[in-house]
Length: 274
Image 1 (cartoon, rainbow, N blue to C red):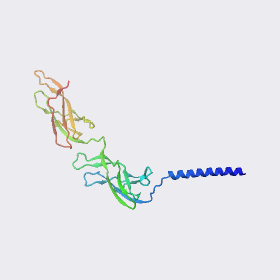
Image 2: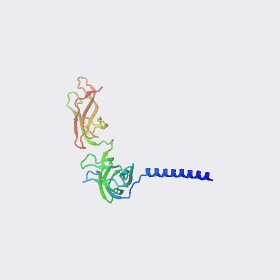
Image 3: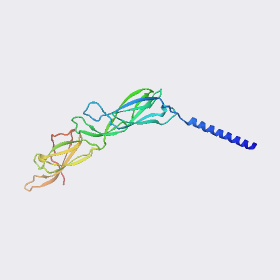
């Protein structure tokens, strides 16, 4: 019986030490974050979506905003972030956030949105679809318990990479089509190549000559545009008439805005193309 009591005593001691060890681990690994003290922050979000009205417009209603505070603000040993999510309504969000007497930094990460941006009056394009973003977020600093803080932030606008703004122009084409003659207007019905080789602005189209040697075409604005065609040139040889195929080519710089005023281009003699 004595031996049994001894064994039980040893087991009880071992169990007691094990429990003590577990309690110690819990106390040293558990991080307490005091989130009881509160402050209120209202953040307004703006974007330039209309270049024909004064001032900025509100960001899109319904856009989600992630609200983030480093956990280290509440306990220096803590990692990660306290986060919340709100949706923009009438250009703003209002959130209740935990704060400390030392002040916390609150960062807002609003989602991107896509919207047609109205261009300034007189612009070549009435509206351009753009991506509105605030990628790096926006921060209000040193927010303390009981405060009501107001913050403002503005999105930046970025056009899509494949967007190329074009202008509508009329070009009058003249060329020397008979040796010894001056340049004359081209006959209607001829197909003309119009192209641009600028990196990122590569472009090609064809246009059909209308009456009075004019083509109407849309081309990238402010870019060097090349116009090219082939035609039979009268060599003006006597007594036997002969002709040769010639290529005519000329470059112009497209204007920055569409215009109804015709642009006259003289292709001169051209070069033999046969």
